[in-house]
Length: 103
Image (tube, rainbow, N blue to C red; front, side, top):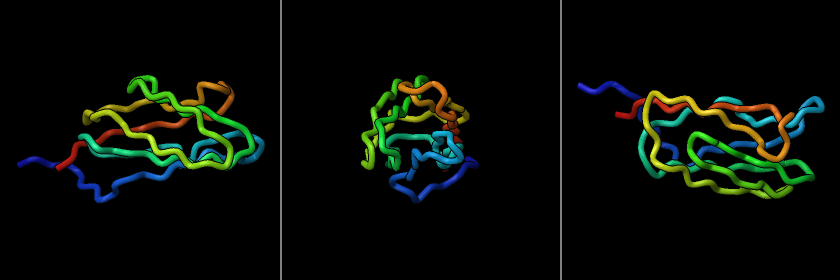
């Protein structure tokens, strides 16, 4: 019997925002199940471009100000944790992608 999580979301929403004078990703921890067809929809609420990179997955996107960008992720392996950062602005607060086993 395989134990794992089920996930009925087709797209996970992420926000890039200015909070307390710091640029942050909300949520700061994104949890997805393993497999293919996973997407993130990232909204940049700021007035300048920001990066969204997951180096361990080869993802690197520039988010335009006031725009929402859909990112198709490669096939995800369970039991992995990936760093997320803004490759344009190193002081941007980092986030995490955690991949859990699916059913």
